[in-house]
Length: 407
Image (cartoon, rainbow, N blue to C red; front, side, top):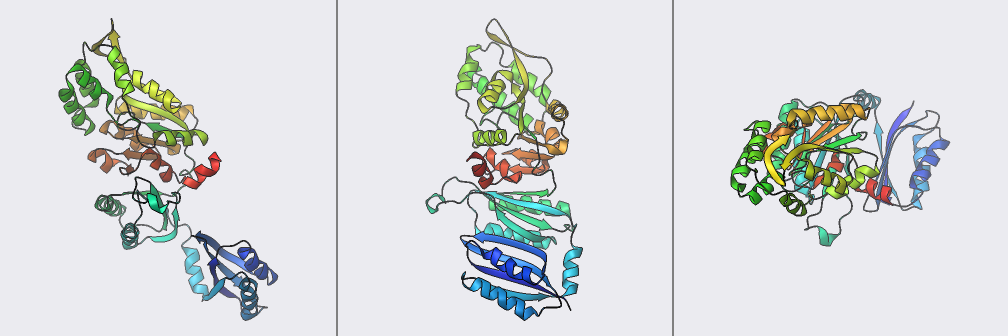
C-alpha cells in the first residue's frame, strides 16, 4: 500500500539541507507531490509532500532522513496524509488566484491580523505570504520607509463587491494601502506605464502655480479642485482656467518650473522601469512646456499634453489644438499600446483626478495615486500612503529584484 507523508524539516539555515533530504528519498523511489521552502531570519522551513513506494517501510525511509539531517542540526516532523485529503487538495487546483498586497510604512501584527481576518471571512485560503520590501534596520522603523507584504490567496469570494468594499474600509481604518488583484500571467509582464503629471509625477498642479503668479490663484484653484473631483467637465474647466492666465509673462513659466518638486519615489520608479525595459509616457492635462521637461528629467519615452498659446511673450489665455482630457488620455493609451504591439492587459495607468478615470479603467492595472475620493473609489487599485515606487510592489517586483538587477 502506498503512503503519502508530509515531511517538515526546520532549523538554522545552512547549505545542504534540501539535498540531504531528497538524496535519501531518491534512494527509495519517492515521488514528490509538492515541495516548498522558506527562510525567515536565517531559520529554514522545508516541506515535502511525498508518496512512498509500497515496497519500502515508511519507518525505514524516515529513519534515514532523520539520520541525514541530524548532523545539520535540523528537526523533522512527519504527518500522514490520507488519499481523500490529497484528492481534495488536488481538486482545488485551477481555482481563481488573487494577490492581496499590503503597502505601508511599517508592517504591524494588527495589519496582518485584520487582512487575514477579512480574506478568511470571504472564503479565501492563503497559500503563500511573502515580503517584497527590503530588510529594515531597527533604527529606521519609525522613519518614512516603505514596506509591502504580499498574500497569495486561492478561491472565489462569496461576494467580490463586498470583499473589495471591506478591504477599502480596512485600508482607511488602518491608514494603509491594500490592493486586491487577479494573479494572471500579465501581472509580471506589463510593458507600458502611462502617468498623469500634475499631482502624480510632480507634487503640485502647474496651472494653479501659474495662476498664483498671475494673481488669480484662489479662483483657478477652486475650478481645478472641482474638475479633479469630477464636478466639472475637464475641457470646459480647463479653458476657463487658461483664460484667467491671459497676460501672464512667458518668463514666469521658467520660474514655476524651477520650483516643481518630483513626487516621492518618481525617480527610483522610472530608473527601475527603464532598466527592466518598460516603456513610459506622460499623458497630461497640463502643458507641454512642463511635461516635456519632466519627461526628459525622468528619462521617459513619450509625452502628450496641451500647448499653451503664447504671443509676443505673453500668455494669450487660449490653448492650441485639442485638449488632452479624460477621453483623449484613454485614446492615447490605446494608441501607444498598438504602437508597442502589446495588449491593454499589459499596460498600467496612474493618475489622481477624475479626468484620469477613463485610462485607469482601460489599463490592465489602473492605479489611483494619492487620488481624490471619487477616483480612489472607482479605480482598480489605489496608493495613498507610499511614494510612486510603491507601484513596483503591485507589479510583483520586490526590492530584492531591483537590487539584484542593479548589481
